[in-house]
Length: 146
Image (tube, rainbow, N blue to C red; front, side, top):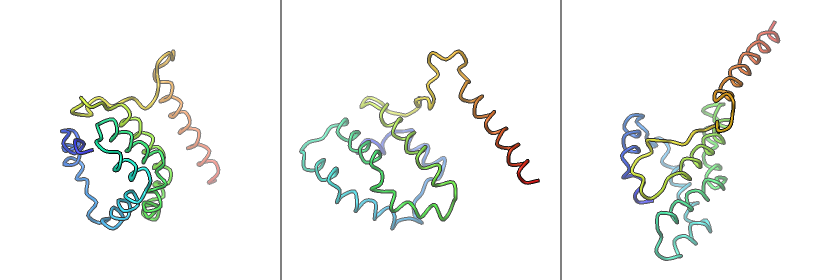
């Protein structure tokens, strides 16, 4: 976990997107305190010397049981109606990305694809499906307004 902030791509993205949690320090503090009190973290810290794979597994376990932090992050549902819909997809993507990282990686330049296109006749099948679905929903919404 100590190596994570040192990766060039994370520094670059942080500066690019001006990522900052200053307005939400209390939420971060609560998440951190809950994590420290959690058995996953306690077992990790008392296990002795950890390596990259141990760090990675802890992060994945926390994300996969993310109810640990969700109680505190629900405040964002009041700020955006999309939060509840997007958090599961975002969590899934983060888990996939972290799962693909190995100790030799210095950057996340090549992220894994979200959709599996192997063995499909049309590699854009998922994209085309989403476009068709969006168009149908648009017409349904328009028809129900009138």
